[in-house]
Every structure is written in structure tokens, then in C-alpha cells.
Length: 347
Image (cartoon, rainbow, N blue to C red; front, side):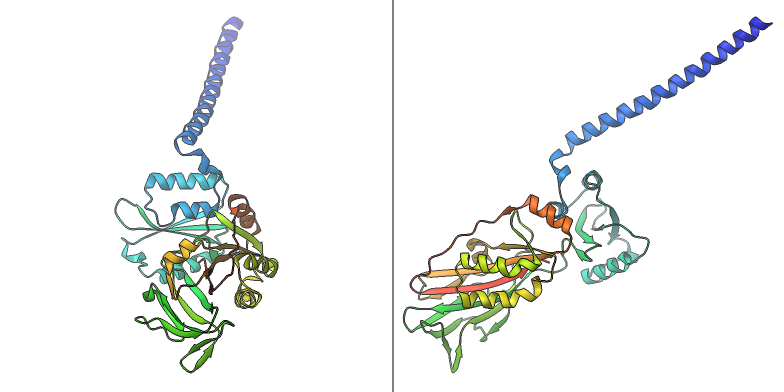
């Protein structure tokens, strides 16, 4: 009787042990599969992007058509980087959630962001536009900074470009802007057919009709959406004056021109924690707004500063590691000199 009981106990123990070993094997197998899946995923989905930052993310995916697989990849990138992210889909095909007006869409998202339930730092919003669920627009909102990391809601503007002329002797000069359709404000009023015709003096005075001016002013829409590039500078707001004094001197402005530049931009930049600043190349400036002056100056200096505020120290640190310092060259001011400066806030 005792032997039978012992055999039953032994059999039960073996069954339990077998089940435990089976469970351990299944758990081990799942862990192995999970690890292998991650390795395969990394191999298939471009490991170098796993160290991306928000700005690189925006630059790569903004205004792109993104499929469901690409969306999965994007979410994976953010999880790898431990970005706290909330995702919102606004589908134009659903009449109850139509946001054809981008301003309406922005207002809607801002209302959503005020919800106490949402604690995420970055809010990613998509508008899908077809049955295949490709993504037409991508919006990334930094809740801490209370602003969009990218801002596709409006194009960049050129603010206060002004033109100075310093001929070697008093003479008549014609100034013609190559894309007059982009102009929004000018003073004196720009004539699209004739341009500006002035009498310029060596000291910089400009005679325009019965007006005695020191510069010509224009503002206009940019042909391109300015974005954070691979080069530039990350500057503390409190260091704006020192930075601009140094760089504007390198770029060829005299003290009066630099003073007017700084006085215009300083109130917008100095109180920010950090600013991203980049000076457009001559080719970029010319492509956006060609400038023709007759007679042709011996020296033409055109300075356009692209910039945006950065109110997150972590984002400033990430940008500092991912962009290289822009190289600037100093022109020689000789002969008939024409100078233009302006800027564009990256939105």
C-alpha cells in the first residue's frame, strides 16, 4: 500500500517537474525570439537613425508621404530614444474631423494639449489623405516649450532686408529685385517695371525724388521653408550681442550697419534661452531674391540670417552635438560697395 502511494507521489512530482521545465523552456524561447527579433529589426530598419534627435526627425519626415510600415518605424525610433510621445490622427476622410484649414487644425491641437490627462513632452499629429493611410502632413509640438518643433502652418518671411549703397563718386544707380511677386512691403514703393532709381553718394546718402534716404527697405515671402540645417550656431540668448558683433564684423558690416542689424533683431532673440543661428550662403540668397544693381558694384555684401529660438536646454544640447559650426568668410570692401542685410525666423 505504501509502495503504491510512493509511486503515485513520484509520478505526480515528475509531471509537475515536467510542466515547470516546459514553462521555463517556453519563457526562454520567447526571450530568445524577442532578442532575435530586435536584432533583425535593427538590421532591417537602419540602425543609424536610432540616435536621431527631434530636429533630424523633422528634417527627414516632414512633408513626406509615410506608409503604415514607415509609421511603425517612426514609433520605434521614438521608443528607442525614450521620447515620451502622444500620437493623434486627424483623418480628412472623416467628415466629423475635417481640418482643411491649417489654422483650425492648429487651434484644435492646442485645445487637446491643454488637457490635464496629457503629460507627454512631444505631441505628434498626422493628417492622412487617402485610403492607403499615407500621411500627408506631420506636426510635432513640444509641450514644454509650448511651440511646434516644426511649423508647416506658414512659410518663412524675410524681415527688414535693407540695402546700402556706397559708390566711389556721386552717381545714378538702378536697383532691381528679381522676384517682385514675393515682395510684401517696400519703402520707397518699389516699381516692378523700373525698380528703384536713386542718386547715391559716397557717404551712403540716397536721393530718391525729393527724399533723402540712407537705405532702401523691402520685406517679402521666402520661396523656401527655412529649416535647421547641418551647420550653424547654438547661442545663448544672453550672448546674442557678443555673437552678432563678432560675426557681423567677419561678414563685412561696418559699425553703423551692424548696430542697425543688432538693434532690430536683439529684442526678439536676447530673452530666449538659446537661439539657432545660420547665415545663408550667397547662392541661397540669390536663388531666393536675385539682386541686380547698375552700375555693378565692385563689392556686394548680402547677409541673411536664419534663426529660431530654442527654449529647451536638452534640445540645445542635442543640436550642438549634431550641427557643425558654420564657416564664415570676410569680404574685402573695395570700390563701389553695396550692402544688404535681413533675416528670416524659422517657424
